[in-house]
Image 1 (cartoon, rainbow, N blue to C red):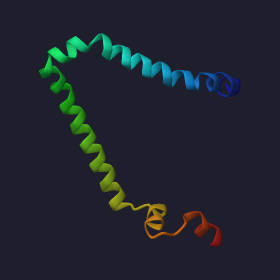
Image 2: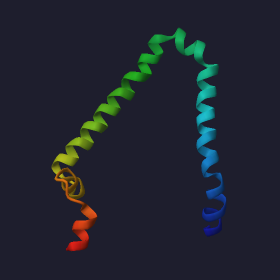
Image 3: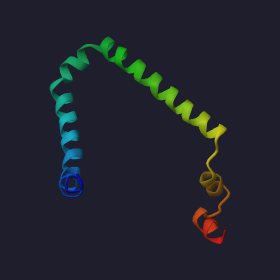
Length: 88
């Protein structure tokens, strides 16, 4: 398992990102006529995705208001978090 993670995965990491990007571009290129001719279906897919994005963003914002991050508070006040930790 260690060999797999160190040798094999490290070699394929850059290739996988590029391959995924190429696959997405090819899918949209070959499906462009279908996507542009069926606006209603695109909206049926886009509405739940937008709702999920807004819900997740609001939920994360709410959690950060309830449980504030100390590192974020120090950064807002202009205090270096790492320097503060080393002085403690």
